[in-house]
Length: 130
Length: 277
Ligand code: SF4
Ligand code: SF4
Image (spheres, rainbow over the protein chains, first blue to last red):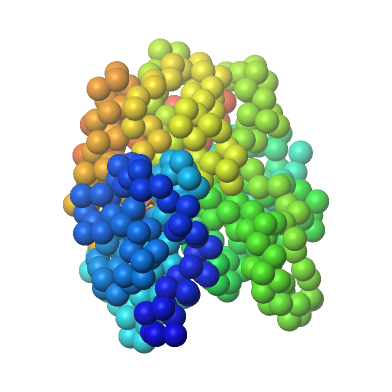
């Protein structure tokens, strides 16, 4: 198995998603509030994982633009649940050695007085390995 | 009635009002909120990665505390609620995950195990299903007559709908029914279940601004006087990004209606536009 195939298997396993259920209707991307901020959109994650085009996804900033709003999870007519794939790609990206997208030291500069702790905890959980 | 209560970190710090008025209102309604010892942060957001185990243990431990007390686990913060409810669902439906969690629990000083037995209730569900909105209405001493209130659900209370089972995720009514029970008038507007931008506010405030201002503008253009939410981050994002309407926690207007808030603090939460605390 090549490194790429290995990553694809890993993404499928930790997401539990079957990308072959997708009928390419684009509803997930149509409903995604971060569509404009993303280079690759939810339906492209599904297609690119299916075809094994993993590296561009791992390198894309799109994985940090997902809001975990679950809109694509609820609104996909085929139950594909694209956010689970995006989560898996992001998780594998930040688990690479030294690849944390956000470090605790980065936080103070991003804060204002009202920012709730919830935002800090959530961002650290999404952007860095636990 | 006694319930186990998980406040969460943000309610101890930036969102004290959400907690304070939940406690005061519960007391007025004859519900005792009992906080378990040594609870830990839920982590703020649920991870869908099936091999994320350790970061979900705080939620599991809170669920165990409630089970052992023979009580439901009640949350008031939308984010804690989402994380704990999804974790409970994963314990019920993903045997491999449950096994690995239980491997950790078996090594505790007092070994235990968990299979998803606890009922997780949001405070709003407690009002609807346990107290009942009709009963709540009878306990209102200070009805918010004439107030037009826009319920902001956001994402976390409703989705994923299959797991949260809170209300119809595309056409919810629970907060509107709550608003009616306390004598005010609910305002329905299209963006009430859209995302505020969430934690992305931290590194990409422009992205959060776009989403939040669309929500507050939608509520304002439908004639609301104020917005209510159960989520500290929704409230932050709306206020930070220039909501022209005041944004309060649902517990504040509940406490106001039940007469447990002083008139000074009530005016503050219901009156003129205020800065985030
Ligand atoms: S969960 Fe992420 S990808 Fe899915 S709709 Fe929301 S922001 Fe878009
Ligand atoms: S909504 Fe579902 S079926 Fe449609 S493109 Fe997205 S993943 Fe595929």
